[in-house]
Length: 553
Ligand code: ACM
Ligand code: ZN
Image 1 (cartoon, rainbow, N blue to C red):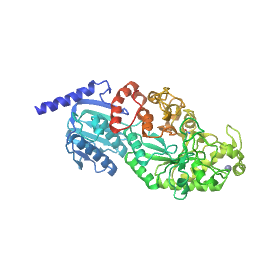
Image 2 (tube, protein in one colour):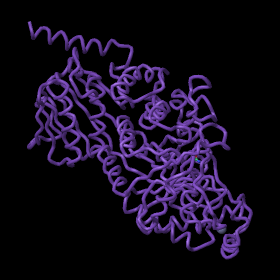
Image 3 (cartoon, helix red, strand yellow):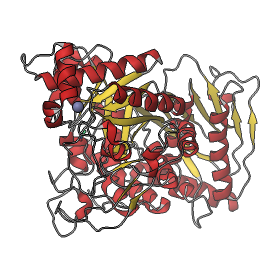
Image 4 (tube, rainbow, N blue to C red):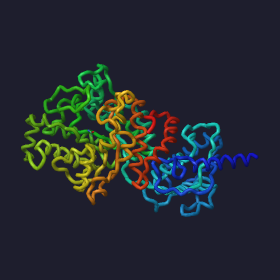
């Protein structure tokens, strides 16, 4: 009898899966895997024993162990975890019983294969991220209760037999976070990374410095965090002239930065820090007024917008400062790329500053060919910083303004002012990351509904909802040869009006899930109606994990 009930539960689960209006294949996986073939029947997960290849990295084994522990907590029956000696990744799943994670060097980076039979799960991949993505997919195939980490009555612990072959479309799948306009603690940043990891995001662009606050400890310049990390008030409405007069701020110590980098690494996420220069620097200039053209005094800004006060780049002492800061940054962040900002740098101060004008004369910079001599002065700054970082084996990313004038080879352009910058840069042969504000600015309001969208929703360009994000095709408008320069896509989360987690996740979800299909899926594999149906499960997962979201699609 007991057996019959179990059989019935399993059969119902499998019928339920194929009959729902959700997945085409009865699975609700986001981002949609490249290829799914459904088999017959289900695998029981209760008491499943886990085995891993000795060739796996310890962080991968840790992630597998975590899945085994979660299953144990949820099903109440222990799952063992042991190394799988003598089992070859090329072997057939038919000979296996339990869950097997086996390294296959022939599989592309970040790709994975999952095979599920009635007796076994076999996962093959060649690297940490491939295994992580297989685990994320497997969890999405399980009952939602797997995310609860505790038993949930009435849950049938099975997954359907199938074969999934999956690989990302883009190698750069980014999510940005501005922690300068509003500060978020290490624990908050980790939770942000956790949800990004579920959706196979692999780059975290950490916007650490701004006119409104400097957020990273630099040992050589302690005033950056003593002074630059705090402002005397915060603009609370759309009125730039009014602030609340309350001291506000915070920063990360270097130990905390290392902690976040290590945490992200386990999740398969590389952290790319941004020091925004030569504009957006009031945090630093308030701390060290000699960094500015007039010598100050300057204040950490209490309002939103773009300050005319920027670094004085006519003085050698400014470069000494930048190089020292970047040297400490490189010690903390092992990423191939360092983001050096470069956006929204007004040139008014440089036009008046004797030191900046002397530098222009010394360099022989001229107006013409679509750029002013001051824009060319910014090219000079970009190049010097680029050269310094190149000596340390790092590459630069800059916002698309760095393209104005003459940009040196080897820079990567982040296209944010629509798609134009990316189209131009890729046609010129520069690598590009697409973050167009027309599709990927998650601080923009998701509807024109003034009552239900809160103030924190960014007032410009209402109506950037998940459907709009989903509709983005990064290769549209590119010249024939340009797609090979598109490294990937990223969404940006500017936090002028995003003050806390409730507002943050309302802005992030479900646009994050829509973004993940833009980043991961080939156009043939995207289907918005299917995505909408799948989101029913993902809203439930977000509820279990305690993330706020904007309901409905
Ligand atoms: C930007 O949004 N200023 C890059
Ligand atoms: Zn100057």
